[in-house]
Length: 179
Image 1 (cartoon, rainbow, N blue to C red):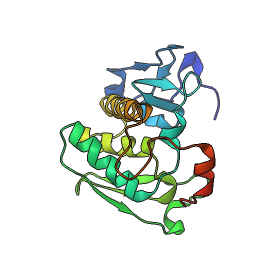
Image 2: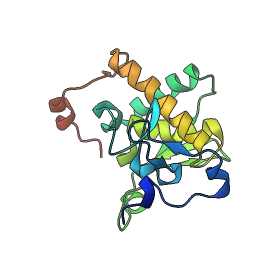
Image 3: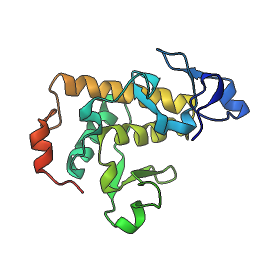
Image 4: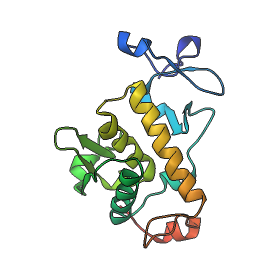
């Protein structure tokens, strides 16, 4: 992908998106939530050149742990529990040039995870879709940033979900094969 002009990280904006332009809090690059793969949601919406996710937010986790985190997050933010599903058929999530992490079904109010997406950052991303009822908009991005910051604060405080450590050493992570 060519470098964007005038500091824009994220491609073209629709008229609705132009009404609420987002900027990286550090470098002030213009951010477009549609190109969320180049953004980091952690209290603020950052470009991926200025900020990165905490390792624990992107570490692969077991699906039952993701389910537990979902229940805790929904309760904390005042939302009813969300139905989560897992589909480990590689034909569905392995793409020609990428990997599908998860999909949100707004109609059913559910999230289907694929093994590569069993991560806290992905959970926050998908829950933000259901909590806001929106696609990749500024409102969705703000919710995703708030969810990720809340989860990170719990992880930093050692407050994981029952039966799972909030933080694992890199050696513990390497011993498990999640997908």
